[in-house]
Image 1 (cartoon, rainbow, N blue to C red):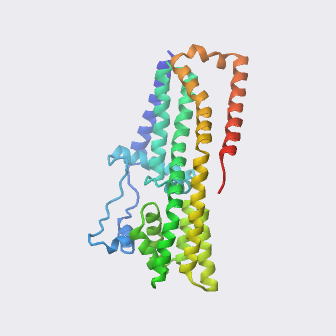
Image 2 (cartoon, rainbow, N blue to C red):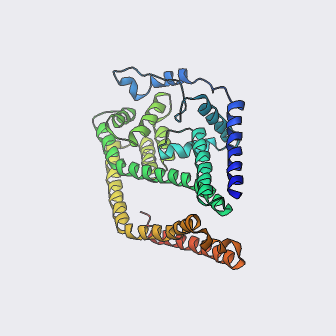
Image 3 (cartoon, one colour):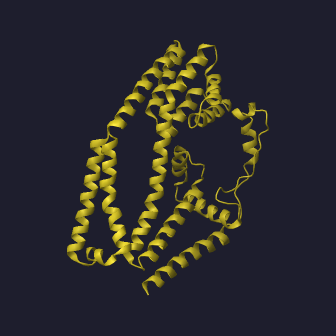
Length: 330
């Protein structure tokens, strides 16, 4: 009976979401194809032989009317909740090409789908439904943070070679925007995409230093913010910018070597921390789905609830302590 009630409740929620999405938002947003066409002239792709084709903006999740309406609904919710800009910056930092509405739609779908799956597997137990909702809410954020960390690490690994390329271009007589154009042509993602955006901003009238400062803000790289600071100081007091960038590149290369050495030495500790933190959670989920009668006393008796709270607090404290032990800032 509880299983049927849970399934009915989830069906009603999904039906309501689909009804609101299809009925409330049927129009599309403003057409930005003309703006994109004008800006594309200033991008690096304007140098390529093939013409730049600007397509009408469609959802990356599909081109059906239901998908567009659902994405529009989520976009409206994000704007009214004033989280669209923060979410867009996080998606951009992670290298995802999704819009905030698309990400929110995927997030809601993952949450409801995980709760529905746990409801079926646990035969309608309330604890399993709550656990499914928590997993559906937290796992997408974990994926987003992990993708952002990987992209940031890749950016830092490419930064010394990029600065050396900038210094070489400046040494042969290029200006700073021309040197940035060389980076866009020769570098690899994610640095190529970030410098491409900065180059477009300089061609639209922004100072090169401000455009580079935008890269540091989007990537959250303190090393690159030091590079931009060095460029600003050089512009004010004068000097050889190519030699300065070569010196900074050598320093960052040593920092990257030390960072990799620390990561290699702490790999065993990090793996142990992940296993010790995940083992109780995974085993509890297994018991909840396979043998729920073994774990029901934790939720149905006062002593079980007390032990459960103590276990969660101990797990959180232990995970925080181990993360501090194995983390070494370079």
